[in-house]
Amino acid sequence: RAAAECCKLARHCIALPSALPGGSVCGTPWIGDEAQDWSFHIIIAEAISAGLAAAAAAMPAGSNGAAGEDLNSAMVSLEELGGDLDALAAHLFGGLCRLSSSDATPGREARLFQALGGICTWALAAVCRVVGIDRFSAAILWEFASCYALWALALAKGVLIFATCPPQGTGLEPDGGKSDGAVFVALPLEDTERLQRLVVGAVCGLPTVSVAFLAEVDGEIEESEDNSLVERHMW
Image (cartoon, rainbow, N blue to C red; front, side):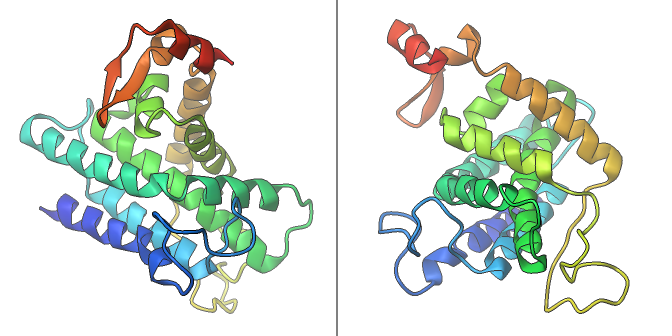
């Protein structure tokens, strides 16, 4: 029950952009001038990251992942989270690309950069907790990303830039600096590095036939025999 409630909290956080003036994330024009940029407030990104951190921590886990009814319930929660996050894929990818293109990132932008990385990191941490971290693979990444290459790469990019401690100048440092309400939820260094290695391996495994044959059919991920899917996937 705790996992379900934390996932519900995370979904409410993901839905926060739809409460902003100017439209919703789903089904209406994007907020802001750039369609592929993070045009919401920093606090929105930090709230989503913290919500996903809570969901990941509450997910049932074991050495081989969840089992039985816990597994079924957790998989339903992950599917719901993944579906909600899909709507933010372009924003996340655009925001991460723009912020990483600058060598000298100002404090507030570094804070946003960390929050966007946290969204991706905690989302995949939740997946690993449910399926078992040793079972995380390219196929699981592809399935969680709804067979959407941009979203899979956005998740991977966010995990790879995620810091294990707050960057200097963000107001997140534990040295008494002004926080301005900033929120930072860290993943232990060892877990972060392990997740990053797994994500790199998963991304390298995406352009393979076994992953290419996975396709979304009526909302379900199934194996397909359509060769055109493989051709499109490889290119």
